[in-house]
Length: 319
Ligand code: NAD
Ligand code: SER
Image 1: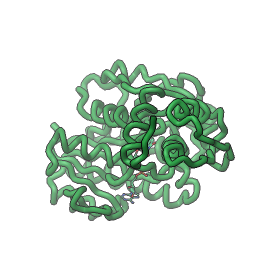
Image 2 (image 1 turned 90 degrees about the vertical axis):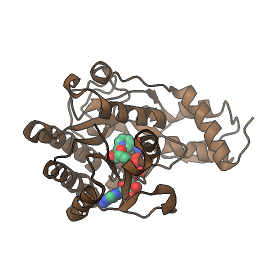
Image 3 (image 1 turned 120 degrees about the horizontal axis):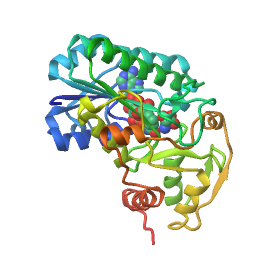
Image 4 (image 1 turned 90 degrees about the horizontal axis):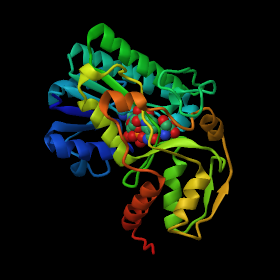
């Protein structure tokens, strides 16, 4: 059983929601948040350790100091940021993950959780209801690092018995933390502009359909997979998970049910090409069959909850 958990990249969009969830379940002192940057308010985040995943000694030290048995490895450079600095993305996403796997092997860790992404797919992959096992020829450094990560995890499982598990997240939407440089970030940004009464300039075309997921489902998925009975898993590090698929114009239409004056202009940039290489929807039957995956939120329930929570956070009244 997972008892002492380290979350790398724990101050990021997903870590900011995963840490409180795991702390609630496993005890605050048993979930250590790690990141290469310092938190704004360290007391709120403690136990916290400043940790660069490129520093193998620091990883070993943290594992020893906190008696870690499980790592949720979230440290990464996301797709859009990765295209602006591919060398950094290669180092953090591939060398950094290799360091985690090697530390996992040498310290005989019980489990390593690794989020892959829809970015693992590429232009040749079937776009609709994309199968779990299909063509993986991504053209972004981020996607390449995710395919490498999926395969490395599988290798460490089959060769060393290190229990590595992973799933392919779609774009994640959340209200309590900001995304960190992805192609799907527009779907979070829009809510802030709409609630502040500002016009939003969207960097993707209005008809760009992508798979998306609300944060509570993202947390549910990774913790369900972490806690799943390993003997039932046929796949290991590359589960497709699906919740909802929509284009920017669908999200605008839904937000306008609450904020009718919300104005959007479409000015696609380099991120359009990235989005065009990704699937529109995923076949997640392997996740459903092997560990019981089922999402709770669709587009309308996600927007309703986002507006409710974000308007409270921003101190804005919505009728
Ligand atoms: P994020 O960018 O919000 O957070 C990543 C964190 O990693 C940041 O806090 C950053 O400071 C930290 N980091 C960067 N370099 C580091 C280093 N060298 N050492 C230690 N920490 C470092 O990303 P996120 O959205 O929280 O994503 C977490 C994981 O989920 C990543 O693997 C990402 O690829 C995956 N994922 C996210 C999404 C999404 O939409 N958010 C979708 C698919 C997959
Ligand atoms: N949301 C992520 C990104 O856009 C997908 O991995 O980079």
